[in-house]
Length: 108
Image (cartoon, rainbow, N blue to C red; front, side):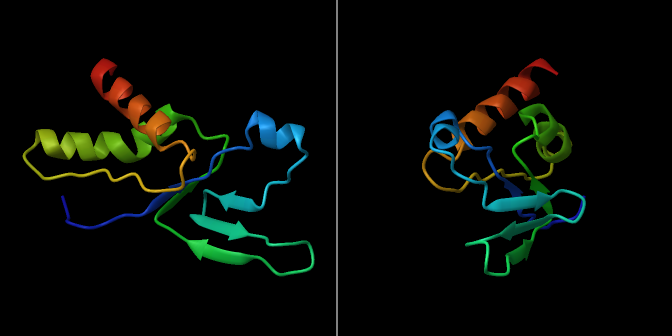
């Protein structure tokens, strides 16, 4: 197993309050290229960022676990070091995603 840092982004879907306020999604995610594009307003070109992986609001926690955490957990069981670090805005879903990762690692 090679040593490297991978940066993976998960963008949450709009929550109920945001939908009720008719907010629009400003982040477009392309999982095939690992890119996220942020559109400030309709007249400005989007700013695009590329990551090792990118998941949109439709991605399940199970999918993230199988794609990202499971290979890391397997490496740890083989004696390698591994860390998953969740970083982001308050209310962004970090705890929700990490609790799901613990659940899947325990019951799979």
